[in-house]
Image 1 (cartoon, rainbow, N blue to C red):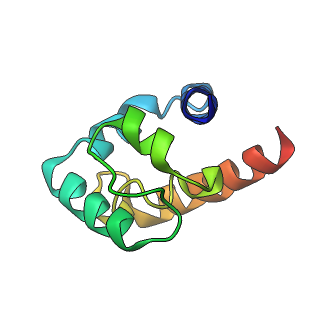
Image 2: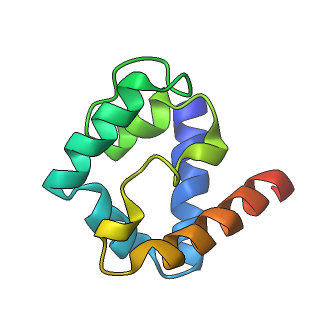
Image 3: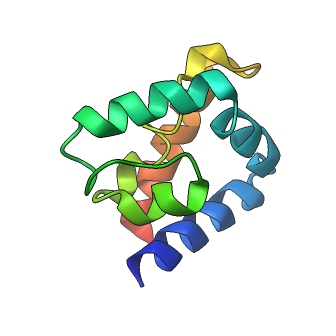
Length: 98
């Protein structure tokens, strides 16, 4: 049930901060999908090839702390690199404390 736990934890974190929609929008951006799949294929942090869906992505990741880090290129979003970098730091703290 790792996938459900990862997904539930991520969705709760994003919704608590009112950033669920921006995250999902960036995650499903066509450019981001291609970049993410390439990253995931070459990273040891995933079980194997990662399809484009958030459900499969959460299921295949080995390290929950990396979910936001590998989700998309932060600088290519409306919120920008600094915003997602801060969110990523909060996420890592959230994972350690929950």
